[in-house]
Length: 264
Image 1 (cartoon, rainbow, N blue to C red):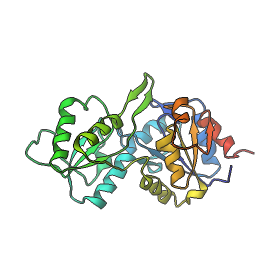
Image 2 (image 1 turned 90 degrees about the horizontal axis):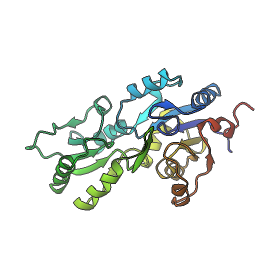
Image 3 (image 1 turned 135 degrees about the vertical axis):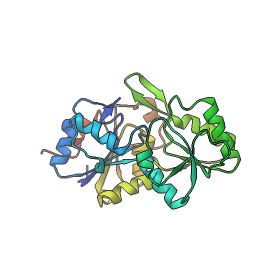
Image 4 (image 1 turned 90 degrees about the vertical axis):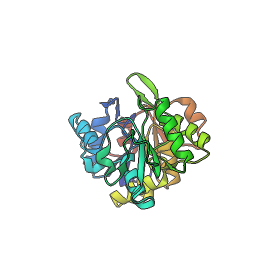
């Protein structure tokens, strides 16, 4: 493949599953670092902050810091600051991500008097019950904008595939007759933010992910070379039925250094 100067890497399903390293992933990322490539971990994870993610990965041996990570919540904060400055938001998310939502006014779920300017949907979990979804529906019916950190339908854990918020998002969009503004992958702006963070050009950058649509094809539409790994949420049928073809498909992240021609 063409010479690459920078690498964008999804975390969940590519480097780890349930935050445990996949075989060969630590060594492969070290090889990428040793070769001097720029690295950004570009993740739709909405259950943890950048600092928490970096701490977990570093403890597992990955050579990363919080500065190497861009998250969908951080992208959401930037989106809201640019598009809806000062907006009052109703947040539907599983996990504490307040640190990455700096500057965002999040309303108390018990506040039934204030109509939010936006409903912000993060990652799914027990919080996505009927009452919470119906409350979000009511806000949307009263004119709130719908902002989604991603559109992922599911992800893989050590218990298998688990339903994610994209499935609920489709219902909210249909019921409220609106369309979500997406801030994480597959939004082009998310990839462009990662490139800007690295000072890299799209044609010299590679994206590695396990989601053929949101990770790989979305990166290719932004001009980045896409590499799909057969780990994480990868399923043969999703690749077969995808809206396009990845530039490359490999078994795992452990194969990426060889694909990039490192160590020759």
